[in-house]
Image: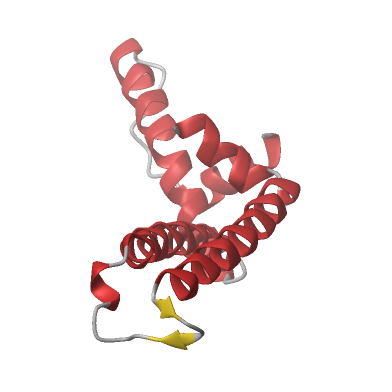
Length: 130
């Protein structure tokens, strides 16, 4: 499942294929539903909930909703990186564990002199080396 989600995220042609497939399936389900509730060319709505295709449309709608929610979450996460403050906070968050480990080992080995450091400069230098 994770491989499938990764393919959806990384390949726009997969998303396009899913879209085309969903349009075809929805057309087939809707046509089948209308056919199932029709009698002599007239729609009989009173027992529409008894039609199997109605429940198929319900299940299909839930699946499409979940897929679109997944796509929305992915795109929302990407849009966060347009904000400079978010990017800086993300970089600091990703660099901080490495810096903590570095200073722990330096303190244990006696390399660090105990002076204060500017953590933002340290993070910037780490980002430039990545």
